[in-house]
Image (cartoon, rainbow, N blue to C red):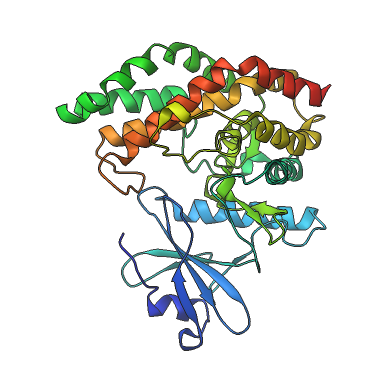
Length: 358
């Protein structure tokens, strides 16, 4: 998918006059092609959905409309969630003449995203927004949502994909990743055991975002949190996945692909601030097992994301967008450096969490 402009028929499908609009590429997401479209009346976000990642677009869009409408109905706050538009024919998305799928949502005025937390106050706001998101959806019937990406955070599934990738990988890529492969294999058993606890039948299935990294939180011009965005992966899951992945990015002051891994460590002030924003909303919702799992959740999710980057590198970069041939390997090395820091300082994380919950 190599799009640089929005096809004319997409504007027609949504009843927007292309001649009176200005459009340009928008955002830094790995998956979809996104455009900002400005008109005299309103600004929009147009997205061309990546069909390779999300083949069941009907199920995807049904989830999005279901969840966003639910949040709108149970929240008194303006812009508590994204607003999606239907086509003039009532469709939740539009298929253009090239067979590409398009959806349109309202662009919230003066709202911005960031790839890193700029301050503890900003980390607090990000935690507050995810906490509100979870709280508002705490009574949503999760069984009504489609499973868009089966096994998305299930480490046994990701590990199986990794093993297959190693068997098929080109020798030069295996050599480049050799040291990293050895280091993660030694800890994989413990991480798979942690994952199995999350997926145990007795563990409650929550409605969760599944990709709540810092750049999926929308902020206003005063760096106050507005709402969660990029809701494609909203489906039944675990609070531990969301909490862990959020801290993977929010408490990490370095880029996701930081080349100098010797520098990488999480910022305890950012982590504490995030927890201060998040936990008050959920402290009376979380089970004891979930509370016990929170301290290891950042390490666990960092392990999973690092494994996904490494697997994609071995598969010759078929999933994530890359800027150079070793980009996914560079990302994987950075993530596993962060993973080891989370593990080494897990007692510190536990003290912070328990001080806020108790």
